Length: 305
Picture 1 (cartoon, rainbow, N blue to C red):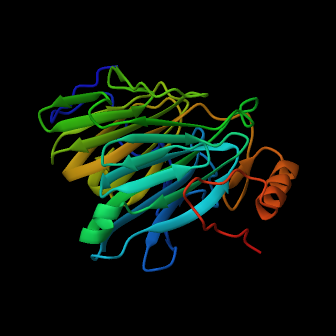
Picture 2 (picture 1 turned 90 degrees about the vertical axis):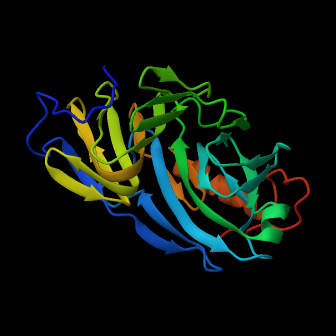
């Protein structure tokens, strides 16, 4: 596939959005303390895109000096979390002993597998000075045979992830392969995640080789087959069709998707599993304190009643 951006017409593109399966306007959820997110997945009409089963867009939000984000330790099973920032910083701590400051453009993949707990807080310097935040958090449901793997954490700074650039176009390949470049992130299933920025008037193709594909328009506006879509929107496409995306103004997007899982997943709170019984066990384990503790943390989020 040719990845080169262009402002010239591309022959053979569909003249309508027949290839577009679903447009999701993310729903706003208030997480407390004035911190709200826009949630695109799961949706009533679509649980997953490839293995992506959860997609939150947070910010832009401004924390004044002395305030910050404090997500106390909480558990996960059966999934991997991807935290990706455009602005601001987050301090990650987990029950495997990983401590990592997350900065804009870095890839942070926490694989819960059979069970992990973690916290997400504003780092000390940014809490003292105040900071703005803008970012995304996604969950990748693990495939059959990998739901109970050992927990792990991967971090790759922005400078390590491959980028592809041309006039009016820039892409950072966060996971998988896009535009001829491949991320170093290890995955247990086939999925991809790429940040794409386009200047007004530039166009770029969405790879037709992936079984399931979507574009999340973070900000800006795009035109696809003569229809326009303003961010924030999740645009989900049918398999196989050739898609060309044109920015009608400066636009930031995430290209995402991958191979569909072998079946649906049950989701309850922070737990994902192909088995309802496994989720019940995870609920009992968290309530009874059987998850490993997060070193340095003395709080936790109780099991919702």
